[in-house]
Image (cartoon, rainbow over all chains, first blue to last red; front, top):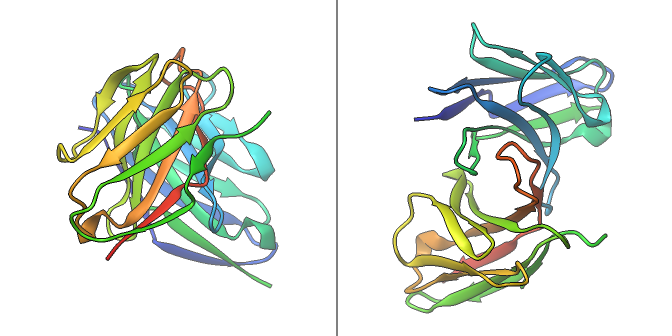
Length: 112
Length: 114
């Protein structure tokens, strides 16, 4: 069975600092991996996804993630945090079944 | 292009009642998925419909059901509501020609069961 683990339910960074949100997955088949962001009182918005090919994936708003098969990880990074990045971030995995398995989410707090 | 529209935005029901939530996907999208979001359980997959057929179902009791109409609009129904059904219910649509396609989420229906 597939699963996703996000380390840290809350991450706090200063504006301008590096953002690192951790995600590890478990999958018996080559996975499709996603990062979604949820702003207050809104639905989820796709930041980026990995399907095949290049393991470093660039997404919107300056975010990127690297797929590391040997570590079963798909960590999300951004070089410099902005106040507008404050939101909840979800890592998700999918196989061939048209459903997403989400992690428990990480709330990112950005300090001025 | 209009996004995914979910109605109503907020809903208050009492235990034992039944509720129907509606989702209108982005024009041209034929797949609609439903997710339940709670503070305790996070985001959990309910079911996915494509061209009026349920292709996948999550691990929820039979009180949770859904359907999709020929215009791709979808409804989900919860019968005999329990307190634990209080949650944000999110609908997502996609073209779904490939399983890894991007999902577009609506803002959700916040259901409170009293």
